[in-house]
Image (cartoon, rainbow over all chains, first blue to last red; front, side, top):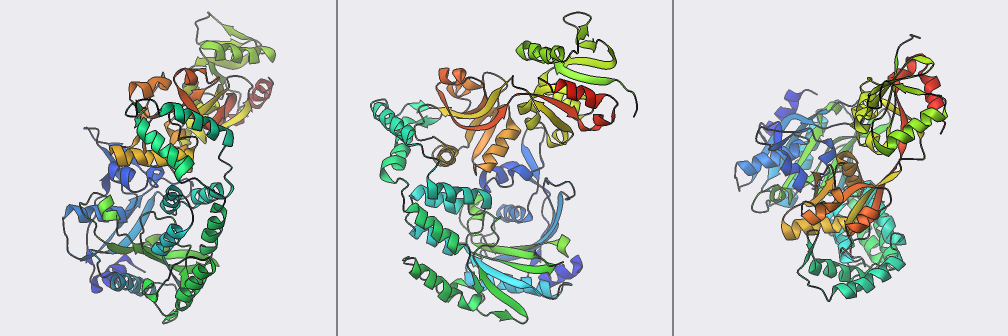
Length: 347
Length: 227
């Protein structure tokens, strides 16, 4: 499939082509995008010591461009270009050719989510691949599940925050279920010490933190909201949830049964799923809880199109909803958005 | 195999210098220097060997660039070096001296911080309450980034500290430190406690991978590996 064909599909689907800058101020990525990109950045500074980086991901560059034009209305645009990331494997090129398309100001969520998915399928149909699998998930369902579990609040936040970092996420679950990182002797010593500290000036700063903040967090951790034995059960529910894969038509019933079985007061209606039929022409559609884990900014629906190359499943295209990213990257207000990107090397 | 000069790089200063010289002596490799301050030496009975005295960080860089063939330096410095340098060097032997731990240390008063999981929460507290990133004083930026990444901590910035790092929290330049500690005494004196150990380091014998082609290099590595 040629780039021209890809542009044509996007143009006829109403996506306006925009040109993105190749460099970006590093702070946009380092401070707000979750730091995942930190290790991959090609960074440098100008004569005024302002730090810049080559764009590691075009979606972020696209959002920054959108913020710069100060548009508040719904807008559909597409971009094509190169992203640059340091690779840890010798044979992998640092240049990633990406094409993406996005709907900013996407207030009609269900409609826009469906549009992004159907445009993705149109692109697939024009490619050289014959068969694919469409997988759909929704991070909101995962967040709702975590919120309903019996876990300390700070751990709920931690689990949601690190969903995109699979290795660390699993380490967190392990810690939560076995509590091996807690030394009861140290805890008792610290409790005694805390009593002494309470008599001191609470506004005094210790390495950047006030004693008041230190003791507040200490009390929260040790008295008000401590880890307990029921955490193990919650961890099992999370792990079981992340194994769920079924045909999309069955998803609401399957999920509701799962939540009922685990005594969780959650009801999932079919509105959560932009595609409701198991087949779109000859494409099978699945609900799968464990997809697109590596992207930290997705907030709702996520999806991918998988193809088989030499019996291996590869991601042809992936995307999702990112309702918080625009504000996180510097916009004054939240503006919902949904989009998808294709790594052109697969074409 | 070509007969070429073999450059052995060894430490130029301090207690580590005498320990390194002890390894040479123990293995009957007598270093001859024109004067005590001379930075180039030879080894008695080995006319093709040259001994160069260098700073520990420079030794790693010189091995990576193929300037030296064999060298003694710290494991911490090797692991901290850039991947392009690190990948060109192999570790032959970890000695039982020059030991120290690269540790993450926080203020003793941070009673709520006993492990990296706590530190992650605290890094968010800095961002929410002070609208800034948590500051980390260290000279080991690469190892620090690697550690933060493995612990899921993203809300931090590193401040370069080339000396007296333990004091930087008190000076207000940092909130936590990542530094080497051998006995823990300096940390204690500066009201700091260790919440994690990133690396257990010691003096090591390294060689440049390229240099294995040189005649005699393997033999010297074998000799210096005995301690």
